[in-house]
Length: 361
Image (cartoon, rainbow, N blue to C red):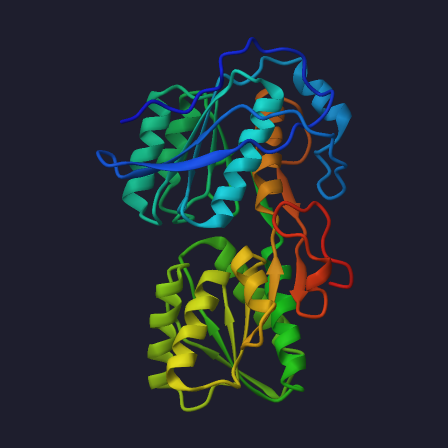
């Protein structure tokens, strides 16, 4: 296995004066371990950023963190580092870690949405004696034994993006809200009449919460018939495309599709293109760069609930270090989402933005 990413070896100094910009990062692959590894270099100075969304991001908290022992090693294991969402999350975590300790060593691993691989990665991070693990679980329940083992070894574990059992804390988007705002928008675009397909995804809490939010929103539209395909779009474009191909064979009429993430939405659109169905509306969750590009062009994708993966990663490091100090306070940080459509796309600044697009609520 290749050596974890390290900083340039500068002696850790005082922090909390300002937030430096996000560090540059590249994705490399280890053929032996088959892990994608994101190696980050120390950040370069940049103007301080104004934090407006998440309550833990405030100067007095950072000042408190700097009085504690700074993290020496942090491990990150997430669904797939070829996904821009997880790349942005890892960048946010690395930026926060280097702000607290420029000499920190951060290892970012890609589980490729494979439970066995993530279990191996958790065991490896435990063997490395990291101080903090950020866990984007690929299975919200089956990862429990590895979480318990990490905590028994004195490692703080913070779940990111999705829930996981026995963790010390969690930082995630308001996934129920995401499902609600997208499906409400789709129902409104259908003028309250039609058949809306809910396309399933991986067995994680973020997906189930989005579906629950979607169903809650559609319950207020009696003219909308909900179709649940029961499929797993695998959180990927190919998975979404294959799920949609099967759905088109099963259901004679579909007026709109709610895909539980942007990548599945892109695959869904490909399947609809191939079938010549150009009137079906698609909504999703993520607010990814790919969806930004799609919304700039005419097409079936009409909305996405934007997440803030950069903030999720950054806040997870801050929460983890606060918990390592033994401070009280909440252990769940929920980052709000916002609806992005063609109407407000000009005001949306993507995953690096700290402010939701105006007119999105």
